[in-house]
Image (cartoon, rainbow over all chains, first blue to last red; front, side, top):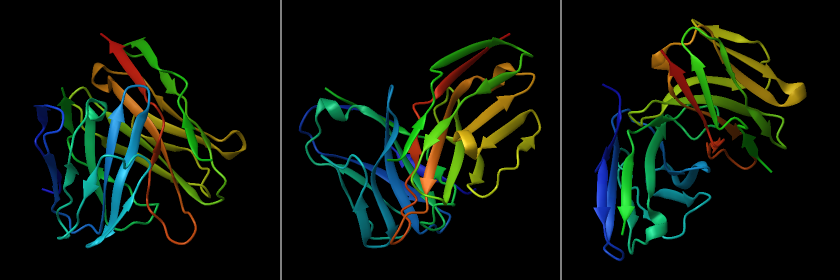
Length: 114
Length: 118
């Protein structure tokens, strides 16, 4: 089954404790991205990757890191999480970076930073 | 600047009523794409439809229909004979072709929560 898999689905942690949210897709998609969803703000792009070893900032990259060492994986790293990063996070992928491509989203990861 | 506005924060209807979700967008590009996504209570995002800026034909898929009007920069979504299973947050989104290479960044509206009462 074609899917984007995120882990964990839920995480409660404390300020400053490094964490990684994994994202994996099995559709051989070139393009992957991360969004965060906040009430009243919709979804905003954090980082994206056009292909392996090619990543770039989205609209809200501060406090996050990403890497794309393999085509299928695109982890989101919070080196020193803070309470303002409490949010619902989505990983997405599409066949290419063309703007006509509909993106496939994972089921989301709800992070609470205390 | 690119922007998507969904002015209706919440809508509540009774089952079998028709309901229209509004979406207004702003873009400087002549080539762009519009999308609707559904987020049911379980939280995942489900792709519903894509429309390109050169295709103003309305589209119907079962009980769902979309009305794209370039003159008013709107891409409205109508559910006919709503059902309880339609209860969800619906997001409208914009993607521009861009210059110097596309990034496939989606600009989302803030979403409309639709509650369909039995």
